[in-house]
Image 1 (tube, rainbow, N blue to C red):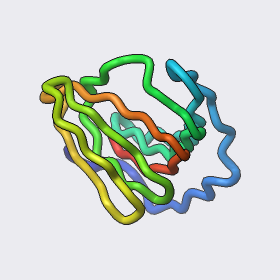
Image 2 (cartoon, rainbow, N blue to C red):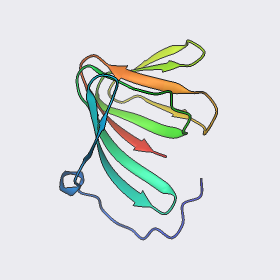
Image 3 (tube, helix red, strand yellow):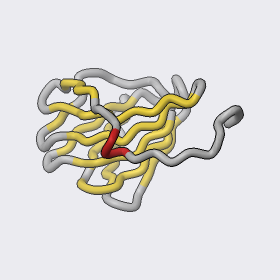
Length: 109
């Protein structure tokens, strides 16, 4: 990833209007900023959220609060808790997530 042509700036995430994305169950609220080809999001998953698709997009994902369960298409499973992160490349390992109790994530992709 190359980061260029982005002047210094501060994001007040409370002032960004979220978009709602339904899961198979539950929903996700995305607070999104776009900087050229780099998308930066604060995502809030409701309790009981379960993704409605396998994702092949690359991400760097940091768990701010809650607990996120992520499953890879090959069957491996991981749990993120506050202060932990994962990273995956585009088209590398399809993944989907769910959360029993809700989670807030900071995502760059």
